[in-house]
Image (cartoon, rainbow, N blue to C red; front, side):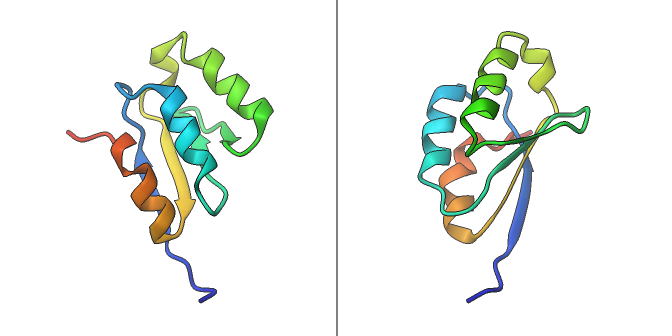
Length: 85
């Protein structure tokens, strides 16, 4: 069906980026990482992954970041990285 549910959640600052990016690879659709400053990185892009890895050396820059995507399948894959209060 062409009607895919978009999702958005706050990224857990505790999560390790390497497994996160591995899991992004198995997502069917585009996955976006949006910093609290509003910068958007396409996580399917190698360049953006590189930028994200370098950002991870400054964990405060990942704080409050959001993960955006579409589809129940991708949502399920990425759910471990959701920030839980």
